[in-house]
Image 1 (spheres, helix red, strand yellow):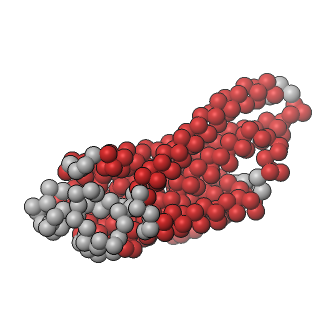
Image 2 (image 1 turned 135 degrees about the vertical axis):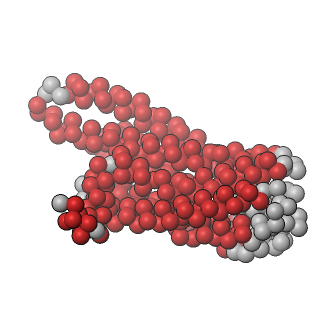
Image 3 (image 1 turned 90 degrees about the horizontal axis):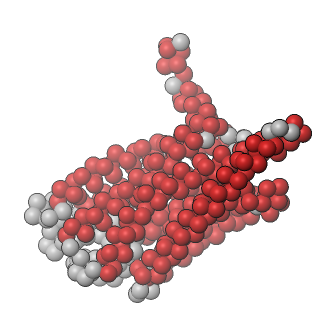
Length: 313
């Protein structure tokens, strides 16, 4: 924040981590106007980091056992689940440590937080584009979107995320640059999912016509599967938007308003807890909207607790 006192002057004031360190105060001092907000956010992050770890480990294991999931989509979803797991394992514990003691884990948090947030955002963009191509290209999709190309995209996303994180230490106006990049990504995903919605509606009308033709059964099933997977990914995007947009808006407000108010600092603090909550919600969406993943999750849980299942029988 513009008016905050930073303990480490050499640490950049990166877009992803405007840690509020009030002059002379810490979380342990009740004088801090955000003292109660620190406590609430620490407790909430402590709980949600456990759910993020457990649910994403379950999701990763279930996805690996799901053979019916398209290989390209599975690669993207697995990458997103690994990123969400990293948020629960690393980002949230470091954020809790930072709120308890603002001088602790500052450098590590400045590196790890933007890294995982960048990866998650770019993966959601990649998933939206992939599902749009699956619906729009029809039979040409498998020819153009291969597993090797998707793996290359994931590697590129990780490389760009590392590059963005390193640049935040050297480019002075990097906050403004990342606000523009994030805004552009939100626009791309919004346009892509809007096109997916209208294309899926068009395909639904086509399926109703094709259902009268027995010879087109395989085409009907293929189109229906793509439409369902696109709708499932729309829910992932919708939750992502709900969780990330408040932090984006708060960041823009912090860059515009100088000096920022205590109320805006509090909004920013809660908005990033909402960002971290997204890592716990994604596995819930997979299990809710994707039948094959849900069945694989149930099978994994049954194998983990065989005695309880036998006792219930």
